Image (cartoon, rainbow, N blue to C red; front, side):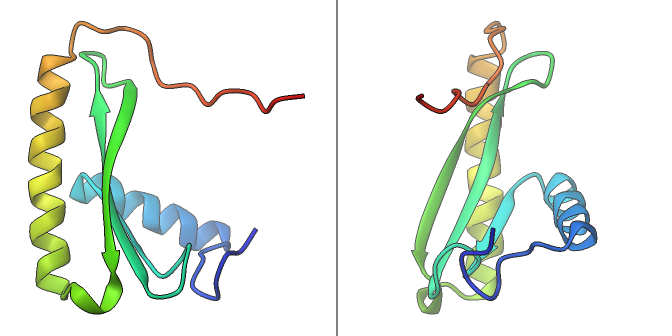
Length: 101
């Protein structure tokens, strides 16, 4: 499903974006969900590197330069790493809830 014309839907593009996200340690969305909106997200992990949750920040795309995105991404990754350390003993991984019937 495509939200905007920037929503990645090609499987190869999605794999490449996932690889970049893993390498950086945070994900970036620029206009792929809503035109003119950008967001950065980083995972919160337990000691087994299972995802417990995530934190994200968003803004109007025009207000963030590329340098702003990198700076905020690195800061958010650092905050989430600290939170992950605090949550390391939790062993319940993040699971999407099934849709209501």
